[in-house]
Length: 245
Length: 267
Image (cartoon, rainbow over all chains, first blue to last red; front, side, top):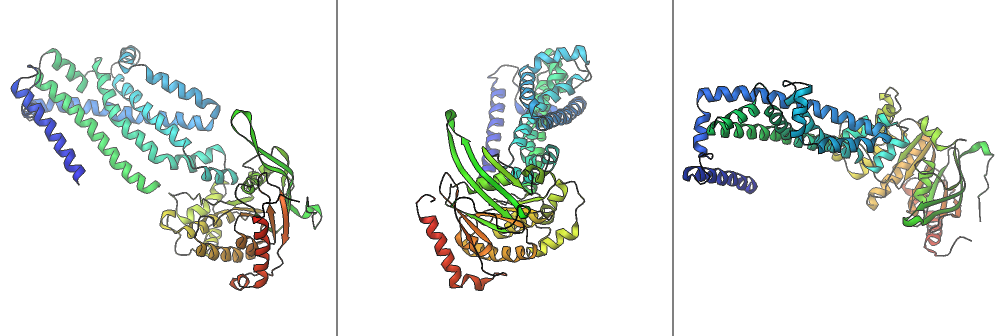
């Protein structure tokens, strides 16, 4: 209970600080008071613009999250079924992750086009977190349980499906919890390179047109979506931990 | 004393370990010898308890028979072939000190696991019969975490029996239980075994448990482990609580305990 009170107090302090800095103009004109950003968010036209952007970003992030997670799980499973491939797959994932998303963006725009880029950057951002979580989850099975499966004559596929996957669910969900905000961030970065609409596009155009309040509103919305995705998965994690351990 | 000569022709031998040497690698190429020239034969339908001080390699013997370890030297044969053949045909049952149940599965699903692993249709009647056999009727849909330690071990033993295995391997299955529960589980296992008569190898450091359950107790030396003494237990079955109060039982227990305590190497 005190933890929660502390968390609320922390958020209030940061919000109050942002308001004070804006009111006093300590950070220049580009830092508006928080109250003005929020009142901007109540204007119908602003809400319409943000709503459209949010729908586009949300869809790209969700699709990228699903795609990236699915590919990561399949690749991790392949590493278990064909152990000879596992070290190579680990390295491949690390190399792909090491390339900055900002460098991949323009490449994707020219290959898969503006429509698919936000979704694919989101998938890349989310996939790595899920891959790392899944490989360690599938390897973390209890030794005695593995022995039981070995003695019962279970092959690799049966062991994967009946032991490693269910035992790994809590760790995999941890990975998904990290992957969800990463997907939102990835989608925004993907839009940055010239999608038709989305929070990323709104950020770029607000910045170039000095629409300070809209810029902040877009940034806050992106943060809120990211946080919401995280909170949803934390709730899922609680349910999953009760079920699988 | 070296090899105990088989009391019956070779066809009656279910498990045979001959000249087993097992070395485990340490750092920098050094090895530790866990077993050194171990010979052991177990007849069909015989219950053998392997007794020894901790660290004598008795669990290694069981893991060799279970195909979980490979012998450095010597041969392990189970039902006339290697352990791998028995495993491939799903004829081996095993229960460890750690119950190793699946925490997300119910009692019923845990006991049905061997059927699913073997890709066979689950014999629900058999699963129900095993649940009654181990005295867990009414707990079919409970999860392991809702059960006591003794109940979990009973589920683990029922799981080991699910496919009516030819060979049952028990590695200190009651090692983590308190003394009272352990004794009760021993008596229950004696009752269950009396109904099935499966070739069984039990690894334990509890002398009472070994004498109460086994047809033959094999005492091992300290590391490196080999067979030190073999004691036939002629106490008639069924063995119930009355056996544990019998002076003959205690004489055997004292005799074997002395062998465990004695630091002397095998003669």
